[in-house]
Amino acid sequence: MHKPRDISPLLDLEIMQALAALNFRFDTLSHATLPRIRAARAALPPVALSDLVERVDHVVPERPPVQVRVHRAKAASGKLPCIYWMHGGGLVLGTNRIDDPRFDRWCPRLDCAGVSVDYALAPEAPYPQPLEDCYAGLRWLYQNAESLNIDAARIGIGGSSAGAGLAAGLALLARDRAELPIAFQALIYPMIDDRQITFSSQWNDPVWPPQANRFGWDCYLRDLGDAAVPVYAAAARATNLEGLPPTFICVGALDGFSDEDIDYATRLRHAGVPTELHVYPGAPHGFDALTPNTAIAKQGARDLEAWLSTQLRER
Image (cartoon, rainbow, N blue to C red; front, side, top):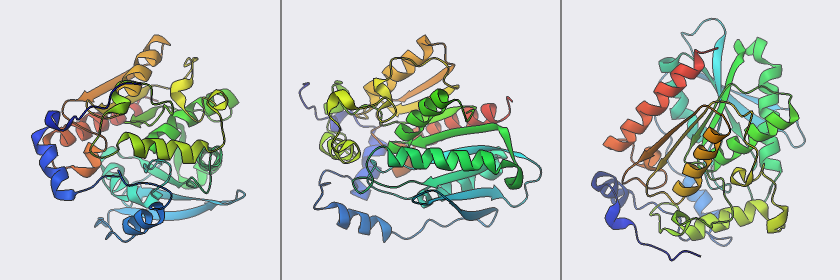
């Protein structure tokens, strides 16, 4: 195991100052503190949204039911390409509502629809339920594309952090089940390797430190032994990456996930998958969401939106 390293002196100064003002990290995350942390996050005031985007909730009739939220610019017309999104939260936190601001920007700016899925959380719902929730929502989206005025030939998937890990697993699952074609996948600092064997996985990331990451994975995988962890649960374990859709991966250079994400992008490229990788200097986990007004976060947003714009119009 690699020796833990304090990366705080290497942080981008603007990001470091913004994080200090937030005092936001998960180093106390445990079974005992999880209810309190969930309650505190739920009590945060909602982000102000524009009135340019309509948001409609639907229930996917699974057992148990899965809720999805469809986002569409009110001024949009005709069939739109669509981004199907999975929220972050270490597999134990969050709801699809945290991505309302994302689609408030993207729907008018990228001329697309958005669908965010409210998958079940661990430890109450360990693997495979969260991933199957995401699959069920995606299947519902394809089945209802016509009534939703969505172009089924231009549906891509994505997510951030744990949501990006679910998106990576979903892409593998969809490829192997051969039922739902995926046009692209956008993976924002994806959480994809439960083993924590890379050098960066031991860094003391100021937002998502190793102990929080271990807790999230243990809740998700629960009783699975190391040898029994499927590639759909932890995409970094996959050895066959052929046939996956064009992929965007971005990660902060100081993120604990940086090594696993850079390696995954490299292996995707070796497998013949069109892949774009961005590594942002001085940035820890969650830099774009937690410090959106910093120069690096703004650059990250521009890079992602430029790539999405191209993907949404290529088909």
